[in-house]
Length: 422
Image 1 (cartoon, rainbow, N blue to C red):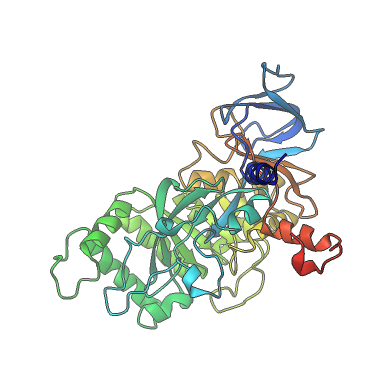
Image 2: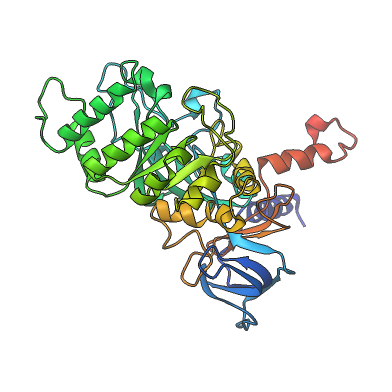
């Protein structure tokens, strides 16, 4: 064989190894199937996948001709997990501005730009996508970061399968409370004043050519869409007093909201349940890290769930690079009284329902996308790992930039120094 032909074959093999498998027809046998539905957990159950979609769930399912069979050996099988509200694929290196497209700041131009849509910058080839995916995370809500306005902009749900486009409706991100008061005249009270003006503009009560207008024509149209119930406002807020004002405002304006953070949300649990407002909590918030979180407690999820609130999980800090920690948030909530099934639901069904993608994601049932994870053990215990993730029936490569670096530097370097190893 010529050296040229050998080189071409090596390149082809490398390309095939780097490409996710094509959609498979798969039968996963003998799993502990956590459906995240009213069916609950099914022991020794099978899941049949055809054309990337779950066809049936049951016991003793027959394997059609040509279908690959995977023996789960009784291990847990769950829907692919929610990674939280992140900037995966929008922020590559947090300390390098050129790789961070999560927020907008247009200087002296109108700072209120709800029409800003962070999903337009999403890079499905980001190294952070497989870093999250090998941890059993299958979808995330791309969140717009706060730039020059407490109205951050829009985001949306993306699946971590390498596809380029978001799915489901967009969400509009708003930040309230003490952390955003510097963007509203140094007073959280001014946030409600400004919100009232924005609503008046979007509903045509303030002329578009008013010298005091805060919105562009595109901004008015965008905000009007959300005010009409087409998509949720995701409100970053922690203090109970601010949440109370938010509930009053959302009822008055008849808008659909969800809360992100909600450190003191437990204080208003009955009101949140009555208003059917889902809360994405930081499951590790337990200390009064600022004046908006004096009432933080590890029992937040337990108390909200007991009142009938839909509880999901997200995390503060560097969520994009540490998305894997979302399982720890749910596990900590379970350790502090949240039922285990609700802990799993907070990473599967609850975010899918809240974000309008539950027709495809968030549970194991016929007709849903085959976004599944087989675990070595309890997925809410971080000692366990994802053994295989399927997204749309594709068995995804269980490797990332991090695992490749690990393997490289665990290997014997051979005759040459490590810098030469490939």
